[in-house]
Length: 312
Image (cartoon, rainbow, N blue to C red; front, side, top):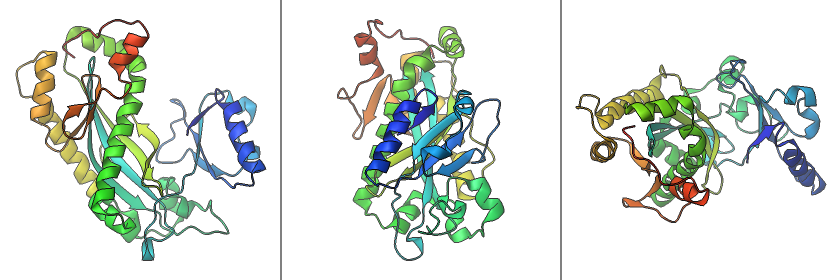
């Protein structure tokens, strides 16, 4: 679902050409980003229809481009009909060895304009480029302001059961993504040092995603350093997430070893939901799932040995 250029160039072109040969019109999201480019709040995002609009091979070699298909969003009735949206959810990682991941609430907002068939790439209906929307589109708080997931679910007309299924799917998808990244994360020199020192540490992240018309989560990106000054409902959720995180980690508690820290966090979740606990994806009902390909299983397959328990 996400192509990194230039590494995935051939796969991307194959997919684009296949859809073209089948006369399937597909819109694509082209994101330009790299540590030294400082692209924020959607300023590096463009929307394209074909391979002719891709950056040149020379530009692609900078390694700063990602391409994704623009998915069909779940849309509501009435004023929410034909209106795209974006959802946000906070993530905390309180340990990398072993891995512990939690998620916190879903918020959402809608595009200022409904999709125009004559111009489906109109920025005001595309929703992802929030910065462009602010400057060039007529803003309407009815759509543009963040709202709780309960309100969002009502706006798009999904049932309580569908809402719960979507939350479970989202948590599981986030868990799988971070578990797959675990070998790289754990081998980072900073994370190695934290694990060796036995220090308590955390990462506070935010995932930006959408609900497809099949009520399935579709991740756009996971932001490593989300802005800490969000306003409105999103800001309220963010502040509460930070407060609950510090309580969950026991920052006012005497130092704990790894096993004790894991139990302490589970006993002080507040609004946080466990997604990965001690390298294993956490499923509804409090059961650790052995059905998924966890990091522990990955290590076993790769002959990397048992996981070392540290005070991380």
